[in-house]
Length: 226
Image (cartoon, rainbow, N blue to C red; front, side, top):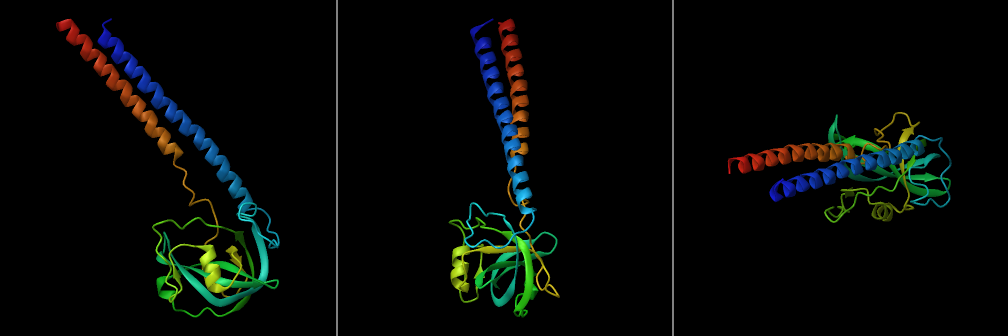
């Protein structure tokens, strides 16, 4: 076997091994991510408890909570959308419970309902504590005059509404009628693309094998002609 054939074969084997390893690694990452998502789903769906005295963003993330109180008329709107409805806003209101005032993510309203009055109402809220990570360097500053935010930034929303920096995302409310459509916490928005990545690497490995075989045949035929 000529040196060119040997080098081409080694190049093909090395590339195939690397691509297959990357695909296998992504499958391992898929298993890891699915376990994390299953754990989050279990935490979200657990039996609700009382609002902790000092909620911790690590320990109490996704903690199910049931609390009685008064939803205030003071609110912030956060640009959002629903697939089946279209663009609209999340309504972040004050919620007074047990002598405390926290943030309440009541859910979604259409653009047309922006100026509709939502007066104070007593309610029992069941939901989950959440510290969403939605703010980055590209997020516009909030419009303080219009009380319009472009991401759920808990510290700035709490400062604007005079509440604790704690957000309860409503899953259900016993107010009648329910003025806002709840958008409960779930894992749908957490990316999990590892399967697609794995398929891509495995397909590339298959292409690499075909290309290597073609190169080997071409080199062999060239040597035969010479």
